[in-house]
Length: 150
Image 1 (cartoon, rainbow, N blue to C red):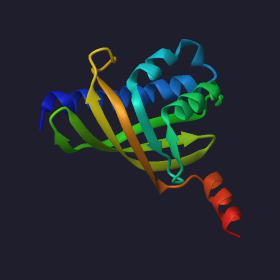
Image 2 (cartoon, one colour):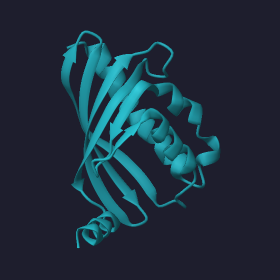
Image 3 (tube, rainbow, N blue to C red):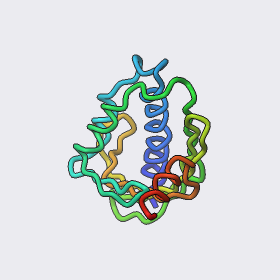
Image 4 (cartoon, rainbow, N blue to C red):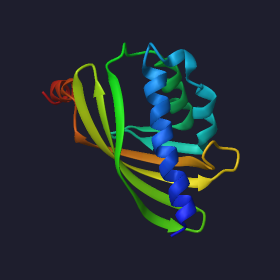
């Protein structure tokens, strides 16, 4: 396991989520650099969201860009339990837990992310794939899911 790649990818996970807090917070979004987000998503990036929907790079960029300043203060993210998983050459998989607090509701998701080196990216790595799974679903999401099932 390359400790440098683990370290850079771990720092990228934390930094990107700091960007999300700034970008989504109405009070902070004017200082957030969307270009930083664009630079770290590699070409061909894909994401599986907790509901199971698969998104490509353009969809993820579009969604995040359109959601700027969505929250008025009550939004926080903490990253926990970052662990290196599989690594082969210049490709590494990290897992981590993302805990969110938004509009009075808590949620937690476990994520698996694939990274490769990119010297022009802020932390020297780019996101290639992300898969998120609910550990604690926010109440609003539980209500939407329940309504779809009934």
